[in-house]
Each structure stands twice: as structure tokens, then as C-alpha cells.
Image (cartoon, rainbow, N blue to C red; front, side, top):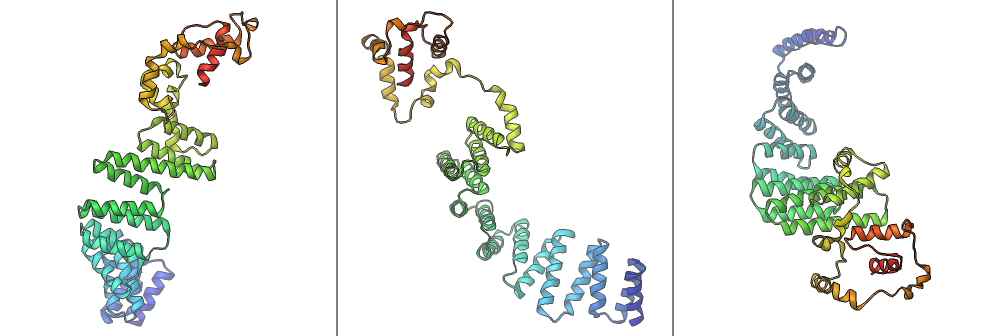
Length: 360
């Protein structure tokens, strides 16, 4: 046995002949099947050659002769990695990692891997249990949000419990109100539930969260990137455009913002007569002015215009200061404003009235 061991070491360390090393170790194990060192070396050689089935069988044999709980835990965890990542086997992977937890109930890697395997196995009750345990053990705020989002998805897609799903999605957002994954996940949940009102309320609150961050730091690119995303979910391309242009000006434009600008910025120009279109009143008037109030004054526009003619004297201007040149820049600007507002041409005496109309 000792000769085979020495020959295996020689082949491995000096000749770089892993095949010969494996042959010598297998010969040694025929003489001493429980030799821990030989099993350890043989398992590593199988892994180095990507022979994962043989590696797993060797590590199982190695685990059977291990007396240390700590070392046994590590061997079982190694098996769990093989059955999850290299030679996929759901049942054996779950069995190995469950044994890890029997030895170390708070082993985070085993819990995370078990959560993934239970999800693939569609065992949502067990997936919920181990993911909840992960959330309870987690200290990092970002990973806590990730665990809560998985818990929410388990409730929604696996257990068909919309109430608990909603609670977990909201809990994730409360943990970090500016987390874009949490914002997007809750938006998607409300949309899938057909609750458009909740979608809009939620996104409006998220916009307010990002704007509050900008009050503290007007140059924070994260907040502008968040607004870009949220306005996209809200189907508000103008808001996306503003956020993308700010990011571009700050030198923080990403691939998504760049593509958006390429497809949208060319269509933006002077508003022209659209400013005077009645269907745009909701956007151009102050929110504090009721719609009915506006409609009354629109109906009385001609009558009020005759009753309350503009008095240029209150602006400190007399007729002696009349602009007579048709090419005067102030006159051209005033006419341009009236053209865009779909009004009639004016002469020089009417310029104060232009100012009065646009300031009031």
C-alpha cells in the first residue's frame, strides 16, 4: 500500500501524469478501501479532469470514513456543489445539503443552494422555509431585499397566495425604498393583478423618493437613472427623455439611456401651435386650477376681451413709444408667440398686452 502511495505521489507531483496517479491510488484502495488520504487525493484528481461522477462517488466514500463533524460538513457541502453545478442531480444535491444543515443549521451557502434546488424541484414549501431562514440570518441590506423578493415570488407563483406575495413585495420596498429591483417587482405584481391604480400610486411614490434624493444631491446619477426606469414603467417617455438628457450631461449615460436618446431626441422640437390645443390644457395649466373654472373662462373669452381691453399706460408705455418697424426683434418675438398660440397679428401698441396675457 505504501509503495502505491509513493508511486501515486511521484506520478502526480513530478511526472504530471494524473492517469498513472489514479491507477496507483485505486490499487492502494483495493488493499485499504478506507484510506482517507488516498480517497482525498483521488477525489481531487477526478475533479481536476472534470470526471464529476467518479469524483462524487469518491467523496461519498471519503465522507463515510470521516469522524470530524466540521470536516464531514465540508465534504457534504462539496458534494452539494458537484450535484448542483457540475453533475446536476436534484435529489442527491438536496440530500447532501440537508445533511450539511443537520451539522450546521446556519450554513448560509447550504441554505442558498437548497433554496435554488427546491425552486427547481418545485418544492415551494421547503423553498419558502429555507429562504425565510436565509432572510433572518442575512445582515447585508441588499441581500435581504433579494431574499424578500424571492419569498414574494414563491408566494405568488408557487403557493398562489397573492396576499402574502403583496406583503413580501412591500416589505422588500420598505427595506430600501430606492431599490430599483424592489420598485420594479412591486410594479409588476400590481400589473399582473390588474390593479392599475395601485401601479400608478406606487410609481408616483417612487418618483417622489428619487426626487427627495435629488434635493440632497442634485448631481446624484443613481436618482436620475432611477427616474429614467420609473418613468419607463409609468409609460411617460417625456420623463424618460428628461432623465436621460441629464445623465448625458453628467457624463453618466448608460447603454439603455443612449439607445433611448437615439430613438427619441430627434422627434423633439418647438411645441408650436400645440401649446394652444384644448386637449393639452391638463398639462399646461396649473394643477390647482379646476377644469370647470378653465372652461367657464374659455367660453367667456371673446366677451371678456371686449370688456377688459388692454391699457398700455399701466405698463409705463405710451403711444409715442410705438414700435413701427416691421423687423423690430421685440415685434417679431411677439408675433411669433401669437402665431404659436393661434392668435391674430398685433401692432406695436399691443406688445404690452402680449406680456400681460403670457404673464397672467
